[in-house]
Image 1: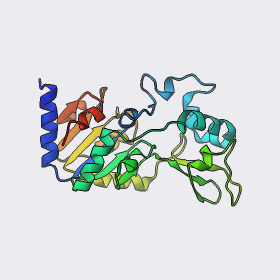
Image 2: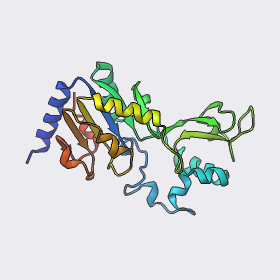
Image 3: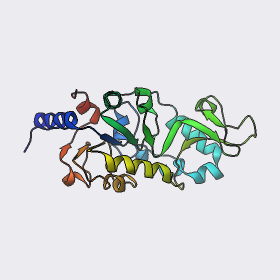
Image 4: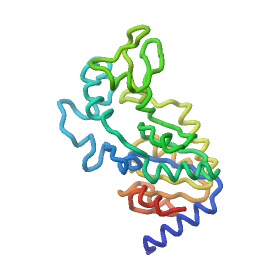
Length: 243
């Protein structure tokens, strides 16, 4: 069995040899920046609220009880001040070097862009951006955080909502196709901070058929046996040791 040091060395060697890296990340990439995940020990799904946790992230609640929706969002989602960690920064560095072609993320925090990454495919949207549900005018997150009650559009008085995919809504097919194309062309796919239990995560990773598959996650994933390199550790910690 390989030691941790041997796995890190193997990962560094693979990164050095790769010319077309694609990164696919989940909530574990952001937890090291202090953001809560959904299913972890302190995840949002394990907290006790008045409604089932999924309800607070649903299109149904936004439609029928927007007051409760925004009350929760301001308190439990918008209230975190986070900065990019070693994983975000290393990916941005690889992109500048021309080694990494795309970051595909399930996260909605915008930390990849804050770290300097340019080509970020956000499958579930971006919490820092908002829009009017009627006229579609774009707004900054401050349109929600700096107001009370239900935020309203200055032009048409429609509800301003975050640019995120809520339960009951479909993902953008164009983003799925774009992510799939990058994964198919990659010679190295690094999967980090995700348990790969929610689609399209699993189906997208299955599209990778080239050289090196790397999985870095604290817990098990259903694709561990398919990985060329598998490291059970926090991804920020691992990336901080890479060149």
